[in-house]
Image (cartoon, rainbow, N blue to C red; front, side):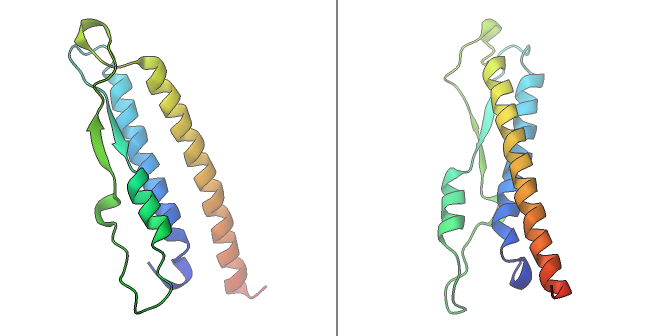
Amino acid sequence: MGGLFEELEPIAKVASFYFERSKVIQGNIANADTPFYKPRDLVFEKELEETLRLKRTDPRHIEPSGEGGGYRVVELNDVNGYDANKVNLDKELAKLAETALMTRALNEVLRKEIGKLKLSILGR
């Protein structure tokens, strides 16, 4: 993306992360009774920091990378449950609520940015 939509790219990346994270958390919740299941989560903080820090301000600058969504799935091994299942349902539900809240906030930011674009296109 570029030009008019340049401001939307970081928002789209973070929204994509939270969308994918909600799918991973829902998978953890769905497997809460599956023996030997290890919960997973997505790691994104490093890539988010780089995306926000490496803003291209001159055409001669190197384009910031961030291909492939910029996040990865990790297994969580620090939680113990019954039947060797490591899903902590309370923590997964808390993470799902946090993810929903962040998604709602991002949608609001995106709605405002699109509103700004509409105003600039209409010349108001």
